Length: 305
Ligand code: FDA
Image: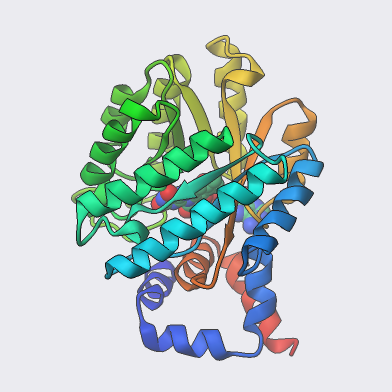
C-alpha cells in the first residue's frame, strides 16, 4: 500500500515540486545521488574505486519527450566517458543508460542511435554500457535494441527484473557466452498479469533466474542488497564452479556500503551503481518505495531541520 502511494507520487509533478523545494531535500538526496555534475560523478567514482570497488554511472533522466532533450542526455554520457577515460578510471567504471531518456518511447530508432553513440564512446574509452530496464511496456523494445547493439558492441549488458513472469525465459535466452546480465528484483509498479506481486514470489523467481544465469555461459551481475539472495549467489558460484572473476555483485550508491566492502574484501567484484544529475526525483522515490527504513531516514531528515 505504502509502496503504491510512493510510486504514484513518483509520477506526480505536484509532489515533485513540493519535494524539490523542501529544505530537507538536499541531505536526503545526497545519500543516494552522487551530485549534479560530471565532476561529482568523477569524485564519487574515484573514492569508490580507491576503496576497491567498481562502478557503473547513471546520468539521471527518464521518459524524455523531445529529441533535443535526448541529445542532451547522450552528450552528458559522451562527456562523462571522456572524463573517466582521461582520469584512468576505465574499465573500473562503466555506464548504465535508460533508453527512455534517449528517446526510445517516442522514436525507437532515435533511442537506438543515441545508445549506439554511447556504446561507441564507451568502446573508445575501453569500457562497457549496461541498458537499464524500465516498466514492462518497454521490455521487448529494450531487448531488441540490446540485440542490435551487441552486433557491434558485444560487451553491452542488460538488466532483467525477477518480478516479471517472462524473465526466466529471457534469462535462458541471454545466458550465453559474452552476454552480461544484471539481475534485479524490479522497481516499478506492475500489474499482476505480467509481474509477481508478493515479496516471496519475487524472491523465488530471483533464485530461479539466478540458477539459470549462474549455470549458463554468460557473465551474471547479481544486483541486490538482500542478504539471503547474496548468500544464495555465493552458494551457486560454488555449486556451478564459477570463480570470483566470472560473476559480480552489484548494489546501489548509499545502500549497505558495509556489505559492499565485506564482499570486496572476500575477493568478489562489487559494482556500485552511482546516479548523478539534476533529474533525481523519480530515482529517489523508487528507493524510498523499496524500504520503510529509507522512508524513516527521509522523515528524520525532515524533523531534524
Ligand atoms: P529488497 O529491497 O527487497 O531488500 C531486501 C533486503 O535487503 C532487506 O530486507 C534488507 O535486509 C536488505 N536491505 C535493503 N536495503 C537496505 C538498506 N538500505 N540497508 C540495510 N539493508 C537493506 N530496478 C529496475 O526495475 N530496473 C533497473 O534497471 C534496475 N537497476 C538496478 C541496478 C542495480 C545495480 C541495483 C542494485 C538495483 C537496480 N534496480 C533496478 C532496483 C531493484 O529492482 C530493486 O528495486 C532494488 O535493488 C531493491 O531490491 P533488493 O534486491 O535490494 O531487495
